[in-house]
Length: 450
Image (cartoon, rainbow, N blue to C red):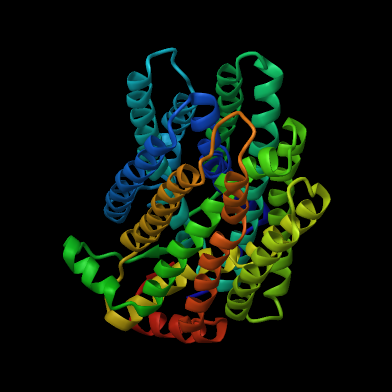
């Protein structure tokens, strides 16, 4: 089995796909909670129920899409065709979520459920094939790591654009009607997402064709449950996603209410976190050339827990400069693991095939996405419940209890989950040298065709 080198254009094209996907992911993490409470007008209790229900639907959709991708192979490959077919429906669904009809509360709640579920289904339709695509581009672990570095760099660029474009354009286009402004701003992001998915389709090539035997659903579940390294990544994904989503969801509240920031300050605070995450992609790719990627994963997440406590203890209401500095450092450290994680999924699938003699690919990627959805559901529910518990009131001065709650939700609470994430990685053992033996075994058993 020869290693396959990817051109810079192909890596950029692959990265463009995650940039398109981050139109949703970043909006869901950074904007949607604030949009639903302060712009759309949902009650925090209804918000918690909405987030949980939608993510359950999303988890089921991910599993189904994983099954579909395993069973369909076209002349364009196994994964890329879905990016072409579903790009436009995906963009339209994003636009609808951020449309605010002038209806009564109950009708608006139904609209919120309907549009959010539609967007979740479309995101599964493009998201599962996309995150699976790396296994078809190359079998070289360093090339996968490099491609995922590009992917996550462009993902953060997409998130950066969301943090700047959406709040600023929403205010610029229709300051007197924020709902119309958000709709227009997200229309721009949705159109961008469509174009980026098409660019990804036309610039990438699936050159590695894995032999996937048709297996009953429960048989695939049994095979995956024997894959101890994949199960560790599942736990890592759930805990990490909870931390990410809680922190990301409350960041806009933190900047607006805890730091007493205006629209420009809020946008700058969100952008600071994303800018640090962009830098993290570069630093991580460079660091893993000479330092063990697994150790990097472990220790950075433990550091996040320490930094989270520092932010809570040191930053007081209105301390803008210190908040920006510490939030930048935290956001840099927390994302150093990201290229490692997304490369590791494909490696655990190969490991599982060698261990069990059976390959479960689409369901494995779908399962990781389910774990991500589970983390989002738990975090979304927690955000709604915690905002309600701390007596948050939209669009007004917050009580001391609410401010303390917002500070905890940005720092200590997500920090606990990142600590758990780092601790779990001490059970993960597929380093580059270990994976070399996995590849040799795959070649010996004829599990791969190139």
